Image (tube, rainbow over all chains, first blue to last red; front, top):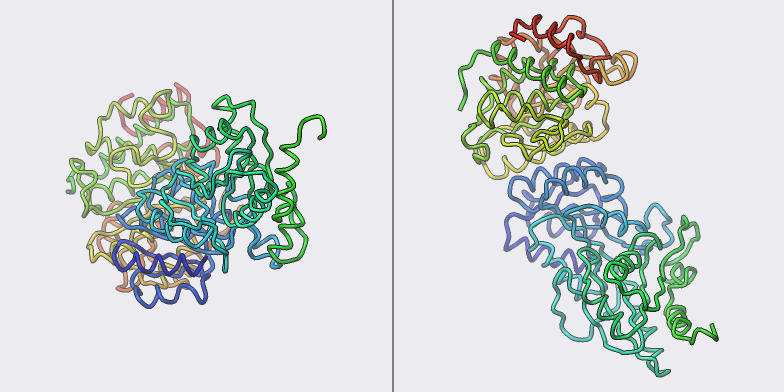
Length: 311
Length: 272
């Protein structure tokens, strides 16, 4: 997905001379085409994320679009106050792009996992928070990010994420995409964990349980109508995210259900426990350790739909 | 547009405003404001290309106050120059006020909001980058404090600005050597400050930050060296102009009571 993002950004930069890349010495093998094509709009700040974000803000304040880019938490938590005070407070046209959302960098360990970002980023006023699930969404989200006048947080995957959408998508920030419809329950996911959700609902369909599958690519502003409709139409919602269970997608969905008075809906949040991940392994293996493999997601939906007595 | 208002007169007015504002708001940081009043007076009357009638004039020089806690002094300067009504100063720090304790870009003439130290210089560097990229002639000034220079982000920006030879960037340090909790020599000694910054690739000058002639002459000669960002280390006195505040740690947070206000204004030669 990171290659798809970089390809799309490069295309956009050919047409839009306002686009700058402001980096912090990360992007080897990916950012070189941009650097070669636009050497006067490519700046490597060195390993200095606070300065990267402040410089990007200054560049954006002068009428440009500044993209910061690095691994997982580097361009967010390391420079969170610059994002809050400089970028968000000034509504600066800065796009914060992370590579490797969730545990995509698996065995590299917790320093390279981004598992609290959705909660933290969505708490910042003015910031759009987006997590594309596949290449189609990644391309569309890149275009939407550049078209949007204001700060955006873009949680990119890593590489080789399988497709989830089977048909062309009409992607807009704040409007969830229905991957497939169903009446028995709704599975709402964000980001690349969506593929496991797709596998899970396909398994369930073979058993006669038909789920609505929703890609909530924009965690903020969240698509309230999609959540309310899911509650009304299917009566059961399972949220799935590769993120700490506190404050991420599940929390955001629960907030909407509470605010909208949708209190008679069965709900379950599938997410990482509130722990520091110290297990070593690939992204797929790590997901399975925390109940986010496709069979585990399917089992959670089944369990939620069991009649109360037999549970 | 540069006004010909005498610097001494403007600085005295700004100091008086700052004392009244912090007295009314029962707020702190007056020592930091008094410290840089002379620098602001010269910057805004002799150096910065700004226009009170057009605060967003695209070709204006950019001025970022990185020591946002001293924002009251910038507000007072801008009000004196006509960026907004002086009456706004009476609302500083108060409920439903127009002016916050730390500097805010919601105020006409203020380029950027700060308040947490170490933020101003990276943003100023970004603005200098954008100006050079666009072939613009305006300069970017950043007024910083000693505490600002403790922040790692400041040094990140120092390295980056030198790497890219942003000679349209000028830092002025209000070098009063008094921080929030103590004297600089007891907190983080920056000396040899000049040599440190020079070694990082900047052109550096040191002046008396209360000498209008020295301030003006140096700032009219930027860039000090073509191809290098300029660093003006302005030696100042925290609390300058009010005898019992000068060079004290307590004037960082302390505010003045009724009696002290009258006494301070008399020392400044201003009618209470």
